[in-house]
Amino acid sequence: MSGGDTQGRVFYRNLRKVYPVAARGEGIYIYDTEGKAYIDGSGGAAVASIGHGVKEIASAMAAQLDLLAFCHGSQFTSRAAVDLAEKLLAMSPPGMNRVYFLSGGSEAVETAVKMARQYQSDRGKPTKYKVISRWTSFHGNTLGALALGGHTGRRRYYLPLIPHTPHIVPAYCYRCPYGRTPETCRLECADALEEAILYEGPDSVSAFLAEPVVGATAGCLVPKDGYFQRIREICDRYDCLLIADEVMTGIGRTGRNFALDHWGVRPDMIVCAKGLGAGYYPINAVVTTEEIHRVIKEGNGIFVHGHTYSQNPLGCAAALAVLAYIERHDLVRRSAEMGAYLLEGLRRLEEIPIVGDVRGLGLFAGVEFVVDKEKKTPFDPSLKVNTVIANKAFAKGLIVYPGGGGADGIRGDHVLIAPPFTIEEGQIDTLVEILGEAVLETERDLRR
Ligand SMILES: Cc1ncc(COP(=O)(O)O)c(C=O)c1O
Image (tube, rainbow, N blue to C red; front, side, top):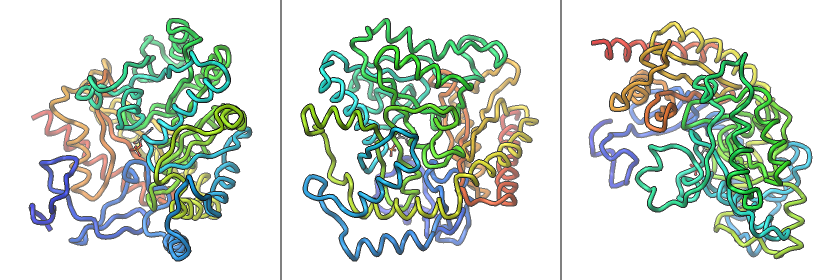
């Protein structure tokens, strides 16, 4: 099926593109209406963690629908919400004790930021309101989340509409802002938080927000060991909350329940999203501590916030079934194991001259492309190298998630790979092979 007749009157993201029509999904594959199969090598955008078409999730949702599809969070709680909070907290680091449910990642990020602010105010520190975040990060596309993100390409149209908030450098080892190597690294990028807090004034800073492993804006930036431990120390020193945006990395994506578990760091809030509903329902959550809950309960008594679909029973039932499925099939361990296999496979692509860096943690990996390996020169963004590679892969039946702007906000090309945890070794081999072909063909075209 091709041509405008299949597109209807939907307002799409890319208004000039003709999209294939998705018909069904099974395991790691999405099939279009012409019967073509696509390996969902990025789980959409790190969403489809348990694969497509898992019947028991549909059954759990149908059972909840039979009972009750919706009740408003200001009027009721539900068994599904209560049970899901228990299950999610059992996966969370010790000390996390309360869960606020939402339906979108940006919404959840802004909820965490508002919760941090109300907490500071309710505990008698009303001057603490600023949130420090990082360049080369993504926290969502609503205006508040966009302000906190650090991706120039996504922000520049909307700059007049978004508040100015402080940003520090990212932990981008391939392009270390301090010119360090792993051997000479002194974690200056973590110390940058302390500098920013001092410049802003510790009495004004409410929280620091970061993705433990950066996803969409730079293609899987894994920080050096010790980075988040140092960040935690700095946050504690200046009475600043640490908010981990685990929208992509949470619920097993990096081979641990949460990415910060790799470094034994406990944040004050975890924003978790995509893998929670795994694509079956848009459910997200802010996981937080008893202390934050207690202060707001004893302070205002009401968290001055809320969304229509917070805690809705259908979403909670879907996520409960997803978490049960992950547990029953030991999929977090599988994400770690298959992730190691994927990274080994992707490293073979390093032989290709335009492949500058291959990185990953669990089933969350990135490949960065450069003109010149030695100088790490990014491509001219008008060439849209990341999109060209992703489109070639797509035509061959592999979905990867392209991104640009990692190097300086505008330049820099990468693709993100985040397949379902159920992917098998042979399927990973095919994924790597197709991606390799797409990169090689792009390189040849660029040389012409
Ligand atoms: C780290 C991170 N935070 C927040 C978001 C925003 O989530 P949503 O698109 O559901 O609003 C995303 C989406 O990709 C993300 O990757």
